[in-house]
Length: 464
Ligand code: HEC
Ligand code: HEC
Ligand code: HEC
Ligand code: HEC
Ligand code: HEC
Ligand code: HEC
Ligand code: HEC
Ligand code: HEC
Image 1 (spheres, rainbow, N blue to C red):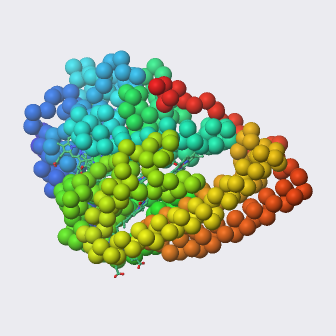
Image 2: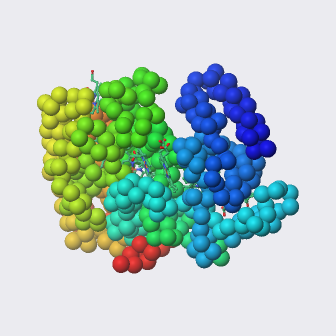
Image 3: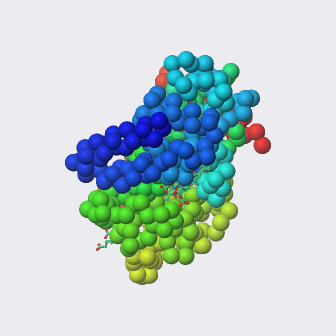
């Protein structure tokens, strides 16, 4: 009977293949043989077969992703990832009802096992310990601690809970909560990079490898990163698409060998222009693949004052910036000569220096003076116009100038970057000087909207 079902599945797949063939989706087509190769007879526990069989009819979309994954071909089942203990905080109590069903043969009591919807880096680490370990060291995993240490939106309570949940935490991650076997909808669903899980682990591996395909191909494409790395304050995907590397991806990406074996995705052989993953994660030459995106960086380009990663107080990098820079250069020199690459970094270092000295430091000095003289009020950030001007100077334009240079996008380095920084700087300094000269206090919004979010640092993160 089982064989027959899978034959039917195969027939459906061929249909899908025909449709996809017309639209040129060859990636999916390549996965089809894996669906057929999947055999359920191989030594699977009856409870695990029940998950597959019942969910195949309940959620055919979800089932199909899993059936086409490497996991399915390696007989890694639903239960391998979703298993839980009766008393786990994230166990799904409502799921037990599935084992009291009479409308399906798989809803019997004998298959009953506790499961959870939440699958964390800790769960994946059983089989992928290296990736999980590297990930845990990154700023991705630790971002909730970082942002609660430094961010004025949070620390001054300047936005509301729903503004945080629908915005910030969608990218950065929520702190998962559950009550009586039900996950709190304010914290779930969520696949932010630094999600704080109920088992104490940090992050969500499906930020880049969406379930249930868990494909390396998907994570190697720039779009996987661009879902979070975009917009006025960190426009990496826009920068990338504008760069020569992005142009080459647009022109030739269809012919890249995205499915090369993990760790064996080779510049020049499998692709001719790098993506975010090639430069920041995938291995090349003597440099190993790493799930720690904080490696290979020599600057904190997102910070107000650009500093070295080991001097970043909220999470000092444990490595040496020179070593990390040389690792990045090994990636570049798979395709470029040494001089081309060294000179690129000379340019980046000069931009960092000028941004720091010409724009940031004098603006910061002015801000400090205004606070000191009581012309601006320090009690909370964003409710006075000059605070917003100062913020955008480093957080928007100043970042764009630095990031645009680092990743080869001249339009971001200049027009969206330094040009805008100059305009902002002049406005900010003129207004600041005027206030000092006239000894006039800033207008303070009395009705700043939605400044209702908690200012309490979350104990789940700061328990240590
Ligand atoms: C008899 C059918 C059946 C079986 C057997 C079954 N499930 Fe489910 N499961 C469902 C249905 C239906 C839902 C959706 C419930 C809903 O929409 O409220 C579900 C929901 C889930 C969820 C989401 C739970 C949540 O709280 O959000 C997970 C995860 C899951 N199943 C995994 C499994 C695993 C793992 C197994 C095997 C150990 C399994 N299921 C066995 C029918 C089944
Ligand atoms: C390799 C591990 C892995 C395997 C195998 C796996 N899952 Fe999942 N599943 C996940 C992850 C990761 C998530 C996302 C939840 C999260 O972010 O914690 C998830 C989410 C889910 C959800 C909730 C999401 C939703 O859209 O409702 C359901 C239901 C589910 N899985 C069912 C299944 C079923 C059924 C199977 C087998 C056919 C299966 N899973 C196999 C890892 C796995
Ligand atoms: C019970 C063991 C097990 C668990 C748990 C597990 N995996 Fe895997 N995973 C494997 C095996 C085995 C392979 C290799 C299959 C192969 O080589 O074809 C694999 C392959 C992969 C790949 C490479 C896929 C590709 O396209 O080449 C990714 C990505 C991955 N797993 C992610 C995850 C994530 C994320 C989790 C947790 C949500 C997870 N795995 C949980 C065993 C596991
Ligand atoms: C679209 C996804 C997204 C949203 C929404 C978002 N962020 Fe971010 N955030 C990022 C990314 C990506 C970075 C990394 C920037 C970089 O390194 O260039 C970042 C960086 C930061 C940093 C700097 C961390 C450091 O290491 O210096 C802070 C603080 C921060 N975000 C707080 C917030 C807060 C608070 C909110 C909501 C008010 C928010 N973010 C909304 C994606 C997002
Ligand atoms: C920031 C995006 C991102 C996140 C988050 C992420 N991965 Fe990956 N992962 C990648 C990329 C990119 C590759 C491909 C590396 C290459 O080119 O071989 C990859 C490859 C893999 C592979 C294949 C083997 C290897 O190391 O190349 C496994 C297994 C894997 N990831 C597991 C995980 C697990 C487990 C987690 C959560 C702890 C996770 N990934 C989180 C981007 C990510
Ligand atoms: C779900 C959202 C999300 C996705 C997807 C994502 N990132 Fe991030 N990334 C972030 C956030 C948030 C930060 C800021 C963390 C912090 O500094 O607190 C960040 C920071 C970074 C940093 C800076 C690290 C440092 O130490 O300064 C790099 C590099 C990076 N990401 C690369 C990538 C790459 C490459 C991918 C895709 C393969 C990717 N990210 C996918 C959200 C994401
Ligand atoms: C050609 C290689 C290359 C590509 C492609 C690339 N980057 Fe970068 N990226 C760099 C370099 C070089 C830096 C600066 C490194 C340093 O600090 O020395 C950088 C810096 C960053 C930073 C800033 C980290 C910080 O906070 O200082 C983030 C975030 C980032 N990249 C994310 C991405 C994302 C997302 C993509 C794809 C949309 C991408 N990068 C594409 C090489 C690349
Ligand atoms: C997989 C190969 C590959 C990798 C890896 C790679 N590049 Fe490139 N890069 C190219 C190609 C191809 C071009 C196009 C050269 C041309 O204009 O003909 C290019 C163009 C450039 C340009 C010229 C941009 C412009 O607008 O003129 C710079 C600068 C550059 N790369 C720097 C780097 C740096 C720095 C790294 C590492 C952080 C790097 N590249 C990694 C292939 C690569």
